[in-house]
Image 1: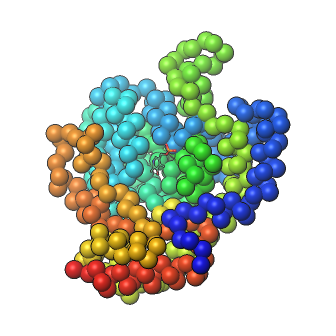
Image 2: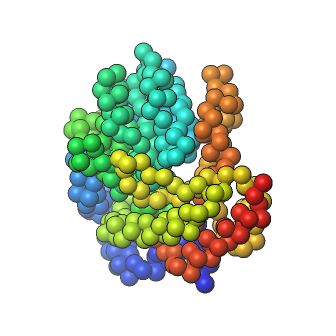
Image 3: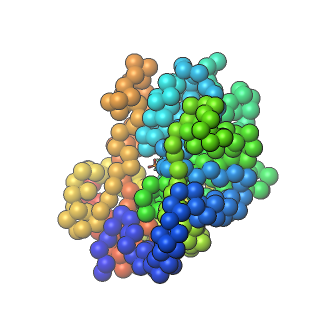
Length: 379
Ligand SMILES: *Cc1c(COP(=O)(O)O)cnc(C)c1O
């Protein structure tokens, strides 16, 4: 059996090695490393795939979020609502821009923002909402957009974990994650569902005015070379990463299907186990399984992880500490106990190996190991 990994980028590379090498060799020969044709090509192919008017490539997903906020002309102290159970980037960029992060709890089944909580969090100072489509399924975008319209708020989708996921509207139409709000953001970090071989990211929008501003912001605030009209940043996707992504984009649907197959294997194996709660999918979205995350019910998590490590099965905790309990984000507004769902999840989730290259032998071994671990570690 091949060694089990959380993400197996080596095996995936072997499948596309010749194509990648050919493409990289062309870029090395051309020496068009920055803003080369490969970047334009990937941008256009991603626009087509997502059915979105503008894709603006940038250096990483965190920059995508930061630049999106910069494009909205917010003032220090303006409030931005986001989830407390997620990766740090959203709260980080809000804080860096001297805006005020307002955190909300999540749904126990889908791990995405709780709409009652969002509604309650809106004040006269609220200017934007950043829903995170966590682990690969969409947050309740239709409700979020309605609320945003009522209160005149911007919506920036954090689609770093959910590229390719479909949001289904009540009228039976659907759109890709990240293309529903005013702006959407994604990351091409190597382990993401569409990952490059370094750092990368992109911003999506259907709004021409925002697109123009964002293109200027990622390029030092300059439209005409060496004339800087606004304060910007330097955030680019380089040609080598764009070429890799252009190749991997062709296989994204295939990678997604493989992830869904692995998820179905897990779902089936754990269906009768009362100690493991398998992922639920909201009816307005499908799931691209960036992570396959279980909630333990009456199991000693630390012991279980140690047992799995002995059996050479890696498991991870995404995420062990909600944002309101992170040291750097300590705030008198928030105490331990304020977001009970997120705190419960932080204490009880585990994520299993999930990638496009898991075979049945590995899946069999992982599921057997976990069911054994549960028997030994139940409280
Ligand atoms: C990965 C990730 C980011 C940040 O992306 P980087 O490219 O690593 O900066 C932001 N938000 C979420 C939810 C992520 O998973």
